[in-house]
Amino acid sequence: MASERAASADAVGSAIDSVSVLGEDSRRRMFTFIRRAGRAVTRDEAAASVGISRKLAAFHLDKLVDAGLLRAHYETPGGIRKVGRRPKVYEPTDAQITVSIPDRRHELLADLLLDAVLTEEAGENATQAAMRSARERGRRLGEAARQEIRPGRMGPERGLTVCEALLDQYGYEPVREAPTRLRLRNCPFHPLAAKAPDLVCGMNQAFLGGCLSGLQVNGIQALLAPQPGACCVRLGPDDTDRDDRMPQDH
Image (cartoon, rainbow, N blue to C red; front, side, top):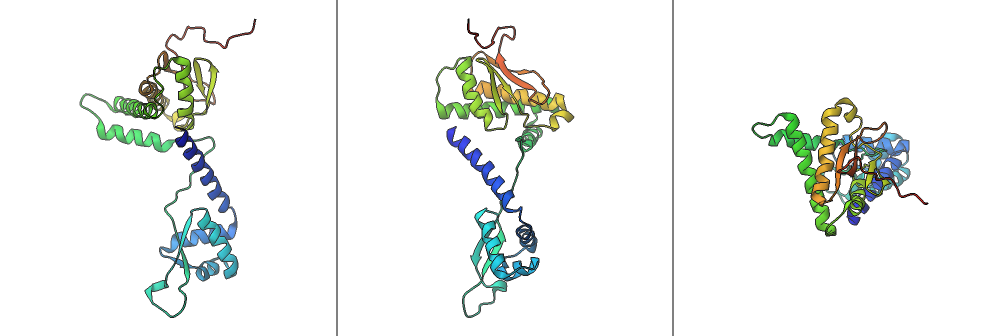
């Protein structure tokens, strides 16, 4: 899990760096020109596309390569072999840049809905299939995390500590309100949850419940507890009447 958290942080940092690189006007226009060219582009062509010198174009192009947005190699444009050094050419990579603050996971929701459509069982309606798909995905995620950390039997407090680390990777921004209660400050599926709360919040609850099941956390469940500006689900004790407040000094 530590490696996954580091990978997630690296991915966010890389996306922010890429956006920052594209903040310079000439650089952004060259990047757009190369993406639309449909072939490898020389420095001279890139420079001409924005009206700057070849030397300045080379500087900006190398910045785009460093950011992982372009790749460079040497070849003869048009496949015609000539005497002398082959020019350096540039073409786009397959990198996709997505930066969202706070984190949004619409692709996860879309994937769950697609899985529900493809696996809908006899006797299920679409909503039931969506809930099943979300629960199964969460359970598999929890099982994989448990297999990695091998925590043994987990009570509510230890289980929520593991959940915090796992759900932080998915943009939930978990906050420990009490030893056995976890509030999720961010909804990764907003604003879609606001458009279809019964479906999206239900899938979210099923997904988080599946995570708890896969992790084998005892005494904690995913509860619908809508709160403005936060996720509609919180993780808390099975007995919601239980006094789980932070201990007070006497």
